[in-house]
Amino acid sequence: MKTIQIKGVSKVYGHTKALDKVDIDIESNRIYGLLGRNGAGKTTLLNLMTNRIFPTEGEVIIDGERVYENDKVLGNIFYMAEKNLYPEDERVRNIYKWTKEFYPSFDMVYAEDLSEKFGLDLKKKVKSLSTGYASIFKAIAALASNTDIVLFDEPVLGLDANHRDMFYKELIANYSERPKTMIISTHLIEEVSSVIEEAIIIKEGKLILKQSVEELLSGAYVVSGETSRVDKYIQGKKCIGIEVLGSFKSATVFEAVNNKDKVLAEELQVEFAKAELQKVFIDLTN
Amino acid sequence: MNNTFKIFKYQVYDFTKAVIIFYSIVISISLAITAFVSKGLVNVSFGGMEMVTAIFLFIAGLNCFKSNFKFMLANNVSRRNFYFGNIIALVSISAFMALLDSILNIILDFNIPYEGVVMQLYGSNSFFAGLLWCFGLYTLFLCLGWFITMLYYSCNKLMKTVISIVPVLLIALFQYIDWISRGLVNRAIVGFLDKAMGFAYNNNVYVGALSLFIGAAAIALICFLPLHNAIAKD
Image 1 (cartoon, rainbow over the protein chains, first blue to last red):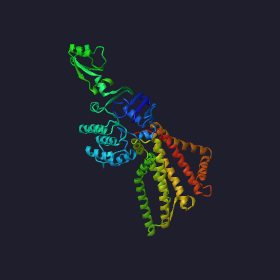
Image 2: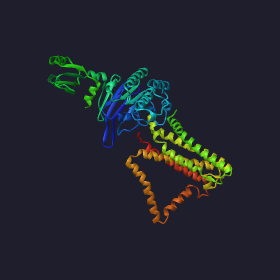
Image 3: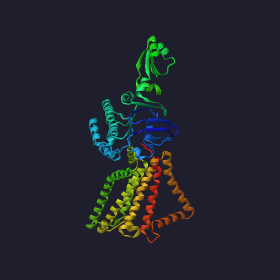
Image 4: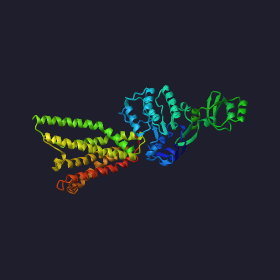
């Protein structure tokens, strides 16, 4: 059981505040989606959680212990970074062998099986891998690490649709086999929405939402219809996004539907639809 | 297994290829010279190959930080363990190469007119003294290379320029002071080296070796300063 506490963490780069007093409690054995627009502070947060950079203020605590220079805690986290940190001239198989040195629970057989499934040549040098295969190579290392916490930063970067689908399936299978805390930072929100249990949304360095995907989507809906009718319907409601197409309008309402709403919608002849995570994300972060 | 030992293992693994290539070249050259000398084709004496090793280790030190540091970050190793693992590896590599060079010295000395650097500087042909002196020299050069590359890595563009210019300015300043003081600075430096390297004490190799070890230890200690807050960079 590894719980992560991010306590009042801020990170300043020169004149830029990448993270601003972020407080997040991450429960163990759940799959989180870390979502945010470009430059929102997602990678900074993941780097802080793994001691790769240091916070300007605040601290990251895992199971009651500070992460800062703590080998015991760090040895239980695997972080698949978007950047390549592996020696360019080293062969993939050798990297896996060395990863096993540092992560004794690393499953070499599983890594080899996955490499075969994804068509990753273990004899290839890191520098000769394409963007997609570099992501696959790192994702396999993360899945085979068998650590209690696995962090993924853009795990499907450069992957084609087939490989992305395979990756999500492997991720679920891996989680089912041995539950662990997984945090996935990605821009492909709709794809990952079926995988993640909870969404953490960051905007301009601040945490704006941390909620289970189920709750989030049940607490939001899309109402659409003729513009004037939709306008009438959304009056006094917490509306987080509007789209207009000619005389047609659709609005995302960030509230749960009650009976009164249903009656009103019938009166105004507007229609309800389920909100999509990506839509809610866009509306919340715009 | 402790992370420090794993880092030591990785650093040694990373050095292995370069060391093998280096000694292949050194041994090939030595064999060629031995062959030429023994056949009477040339009449030369040569020596001081240890300085070649020292320069090799300095360059190796310059090249052994960035890639390994990033790999250690990828494996979530703390900087503290990375530091200790590296220091142990650098000292071990220096000791190993000092031993190889000392053995090579004996072999070459036996076959051709050859003088090792300790013989040239101190007139001593003691195996142990030579080994110790080379060990100190190699550790110093390797740590110095490691420190310089780490210092550059941890600095931003402006600081890189500053630390590149400062030594030049210091040399110019010392030269100026030396000129106005009629050689005082140069005399002080020579006097210091004379004592530190043991020449002032009846060419004592052990004093020289001790000074080299003190220098290496001082550099190894300050290596932690740029490392303790180093982060992954492109």
